[in-house]
Length: 178
Image 1 (cartoon, rainbow, N blue to C red):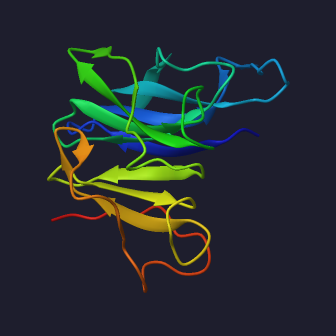
Image 2 (cartoon, rainbow, N blue to C red):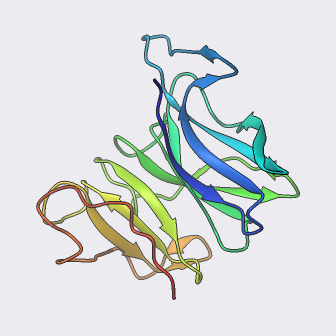
């Protein structure tokens, strides 16, 4: 009945962060305008079952958070949100993770984010960011982009991955390795 979507595993495979509609423990919640938003939740593997589902602390009933992507060392997580203060529809944010505690989300700024929608981030082993956007110049719809990250900044700008990875339709969900 409700959306459960993009997720990311911690490198030990025993903890996950996932996207789900604002529905937990049998109860759906909505924003002031009646919309059931997306939220990020974590879960822990206990024996053969996922349990201990917890809502991440920066979620809100008034905006969506989703599409998590952990860095290889599990110290940062990229995600998208339409929270107030962004550049457009949905922006890419990064949040630190330290000893089980989440920091405050930080918008990646206008080098990455546009007035359009940035979505579906992925981080490779080197900490480089891949994401989809319909706001950067592309071939049409959502296109895949790459940003070489250094100290949290796309220091060489953003590059469209081009054809054949991108098309005039929506292109997203890239996962790659070294």
